[in-house]
Image 1 (cartoon, rainbow, N blue to C red):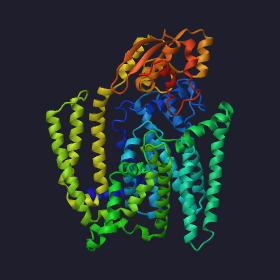
Image 2 (image 1 turned 135 degrees about the horizontal axis):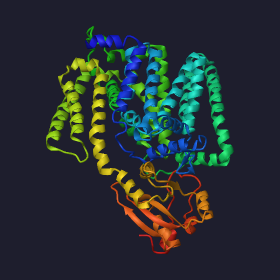
Image 3 (image 1 turned 90 degrees about the vertical axis):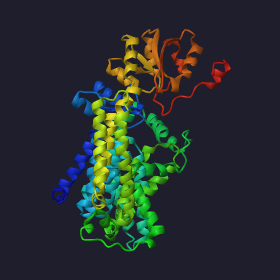
Image 4 (image 1 turned 180 degrees about the vertical axis):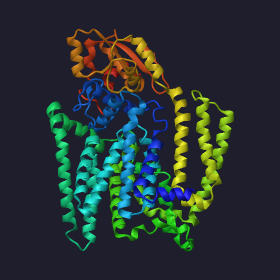
Length: 602
């Protein structure tokens, strides 16, 4: 039965792609709206999209009524479109743009591999390897721009390869459009990843090939595509600059791009940070590549040539060992090796570091696993993976049963507990009952089952517990009740998920900016209610007391993540806060010298 189903689904590339895309959608949609926003950036993206829908201002995004130019608006446009079409604002719909971006990501990965290999099995495996990697698994269910940017950057890089190889007008259009859209998602980094990899590739190929026109022919096509993408970008950038000022756009470029490259990182993440990040974010596939490389370097002489039976010869590990015998695939391997290495080098040199910044180069790393990781999947080595997997599954079943019998988690419904643990136990029992050969032949499917069990447990056990213990919804409800309909103001560092949930309850919240302060003064407003984050902005309370002892601490709202202060502040002293026109990348520094001189710094 399984064999017949496999033959039906994986004998037609379009059916196979639909299966993989549908699985990606299912894996991401499970419990998508269960978890509250856990990062302020998720709330930021959604608030910006919400204000686009309310204000119908698509060119200049705003956050809490203040212009925000830290990122281009494409993700906000997609998110606003989702909110507009559904007329519902929730975590589920806010995360849908990432889900659809992830599905498109997988479809492009599938047809990229099918175009160069003509193998449905290899294409499906390469797509599943992308889906079943840790960072992809996380970002596809987040209301963040990273999935959209990663997808568009990979489409730009992938289409550039086919453009250089085939010089086809369809790939020229795809290259120009995807590069433009990637820029409209996160700005110049798409050009860093693109040119940083392609130019060394062209230079290398020119040096090793007898065709000295190689560099010139392909570079001309790329230049034409880049010019087309820049023209498309300018159609957005010029009208924006006319509204906010080109000097302001240049300052945003310096702040968001250049200073992140050269500024010292307070996170103390050195040059080798991304080595660990790539390994962790591409698990379990990174392990296959590492084992294969170590085996080929140190242990290959200890293994005799395997006697592969006719049944085993159709299994996917044996196909990959012969891939690079095809000239086009060999070219593909060189291309993605250079793309990954150059992207890795550029990220490592930059000072501002975050694990998710390496996401645009992870597909290239996955491609290298598919190309060079097959040796670790030979039966003589793969048996050690099976032993580990079965040991882990045994422990998982025992732990699941013990946890179900002896543990109860606050906020977790009993039915959800049964669902989560039940799925996890069943998946691990399937692994225990499967033979080594079956797991070896269908290993991508077994990895998918593990990721499915993790998603179900995360959605129905961990998330309800986390929401119960760290929810800000009750805090937002108390805040709205305390204000009694009065508007609320923030500065720049406040973690805005609290504001997001308060806005859903009808609270009007504004960000203090120089323009807003002048408006308050001209309106004759005497006092405002100001919200400060304890971790980031508590120092401002002492600053406010310096300028006005009448500043009143209305209430402290304790929270496990970060408590907040609600203050009643005279409008007459707001100019002394020195708030910026634009949202800064980092919180403003405290006025330490001023506080120390008055012995108010603890």
